[in-house]
Image (tube, rainbow, N blue to C red; front, side, top):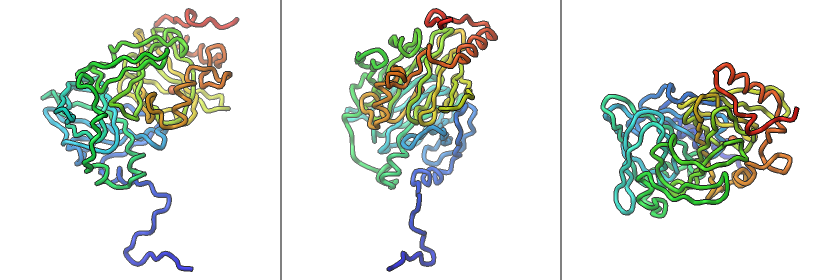
Amino acid sequence: MTTGSTGEGASPPPFLADPYREFTAREGIPQYEDFGFDLLSLELTPWPRLEAKGAFAHCLGRGDFADMYVCEIAPGGRTSPQRHLYEAVVYVLAGRGSTTIDAPDGPRTFEWHEGSLFALPLNGRYQHFNGSGSKPARFAAVTDLPLVMNVFRSESFIFDNDTTFPERFGDPRYNQGDGTFIPRQPGRHMWETNFVPDLRTLELQQWDKRGGGSRNIMFALADGTMHAHISEMPVGTYKKGHRHGADFHVFAVSGRGYSLYWYEGESELRRFDWRHGTVFTPTDMLFHQHFNTSAEPARYLAIAFGGLRYPTLGDKRKTFSGMDVSLKDGGRQIEYEDEDPRIRRMFEDELRRSGVPSHMSEVFAPAR
Ligand SMILES: [Fe+2]
């Protein structure tokens, strides 16, 4: 029997290797890891690759396929041009600016600001510009780089690859704030686009089965594998609890509120407070539930790997079909009548403290 030699100076053969994390360590920017973050206050350092400031923000529930980084462009500044063989969905946290993408039919430039959402088409060259001479512009990007890096383990393949994917760019109006509405059924209606100028004002569709008065839209962005959707809770209401696999990065967009989460078999209800700038990811099959405590409708954005058009993962397929079906019927949702009574009481107490009227009795009256 021969034994693999690890002669002097040779590196040992890989064992439980994580090429993605080796890559992020080499990027030379902070790597934060937590259940959730306030992305507006996260400290960033110069990132040579982008010629801007950045940090990786690894949420504990990010799963195996998705990651997130935060980037800040100095006033009057720009990033260096980028191109890569992974997808990225960008949510603008602060400031304003523009992005130019080299599409097969010529360059496309669109202007964004706080609350904008856009996708970077696979391997399309792009560059971001800060539109202000006095204020920084900060955004978060959720990507599928962990999947791509761990499979190919080659920076040149990922960042210096001439393969083009013209079908990913879509209609030029998809970069002008326009899109195509694709009706399916409540909760699964889709908006196909590459750029949403303002998630706070985008028209949503009714989805009562996820909670009284709930509205949402699912996105098909740059014909990609990455998923995004936005949901809204009216004043004085909350969504029904549910669970699903990892990697849904949940960004608060407008309003304020909190989410409860609990592990199966545990009685402790844990809490994450949110407002614009915060993000968290429920870990794999963690029960969680979102509550609006503000005097305005509250919206949140979720970005994940595997969407409604291309679920890719078996778990995403199950989630998108069972997300508004009761656990009792094989789905993934806890109906109001089945929830822990502490949940409703805690919400009503919270609203009383903030002087916001509850509208829960209009959407669900518990049996006395
Ligand atoms: Fe969820």
